[in-house]
Length: 127
Image (cartoon, rainbow, N blue to C red; front, side):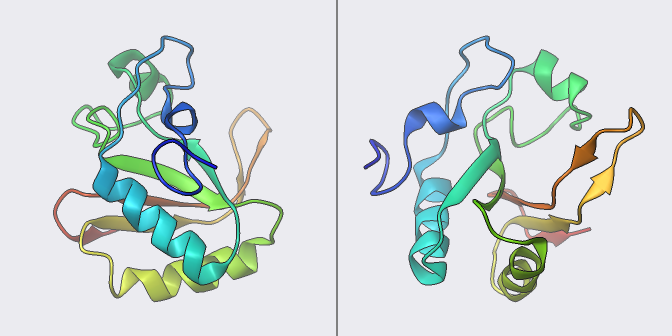
């Protein structure tokens, strides 16, 4: 049980660098809750709110919606990337803000990054 919605808690959206910055727009939480309810799958928040320093380290744009608590990178817990890609492809048609599916990849340091979706509440755009 979450403190922001039925399944999401404020602690899931805190900046991952440990600085304690924590803010998420409740409209974003509501949308994530709707996705979770329809898919009937748990969602993992990979990145929610970010401080400016952590945003730069992660390669975020200087005006990133993550800094303002308006964006989230997420995936389904314990499910393959094919299902995530299928659901994200369907959501692309209906999401009013920014939305993008990032496939799994190997980073320059050799580590593996799992597939995830970026969703935000800024203007409608796809990339």
